[in-house]
Image (cartoon, rainbow, N blue to C red; front, top):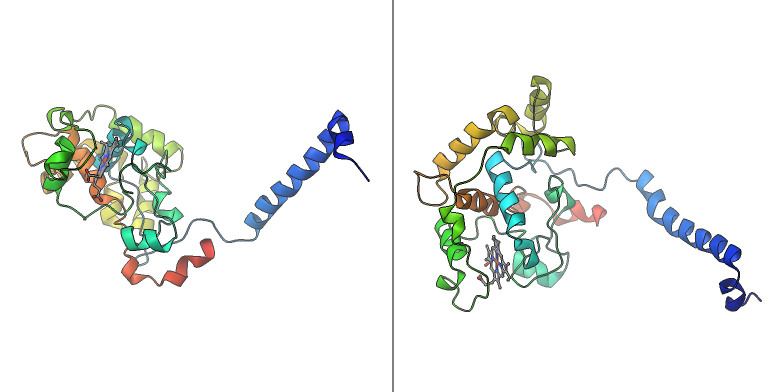
Length: 251
Ligand code: HEC
């Protein structure tokens, strides 16, 4: 009988047995990946286009502010597949929903509530007031004030470089007409137009003009971008149109 002591006192044997143990673990994790179609759900709209799209340039800049301010220190963005979570937040998060997030914001710390299904829950005006001074709408809140978001102008000078960098890691923003055409096919024309890197500044101006997130049409503030981002969270897939069983094979 091989004693544990003899393994621990024999470096060569310990290395060999460690490698065997790691290989078994590796095989169990890696081999199944060759036999499944994919690990990211292929969620489509009724017209056959992809439900989950990359963020518009404005939403993406809002996301950068979200990470800059460290919102992830208190908020997760992942509804786990448990009953209590589904009752509180809605359908559990799919991998597809964060496929364009770099870095992802799943998180594990919930000082505040999960934000994965936040979009549409409150009005833009509520978000503005809440971010400037959370206590003004939720008196017991311990969330910090972020008044500068309303005062500071949104820096859009490097937006094209940011989108190009994201493209480099696989987010389908388009630089060439070929890439644009592929986006039309995958996401539909309306969405494809919003992913053209060369038009980023115009797209930002258009989106703010349409929605006027911060309530001040004369100014493009950091608040505009952050609220645009918060309002799109979890809204891309219409779960009412999908049968829950559809996604189970990916769990
Ligand atoms: C120190 C921890 C902390 C930080 C940092 C923080 N929050 Fe919060 N947040 C909370 C708490 C606690 C609540 C619940 C009370 C409330 O609604 O204010 C909350 C609530 C929220 C809500 C309402 C969610 C809901 O479903 O009712 C939103 C939206 C939100 N935070 C966004 C943000 C954003 C954006 C940032 C970064 C700019 C941020 N939070 C930073 C703690 C934090």
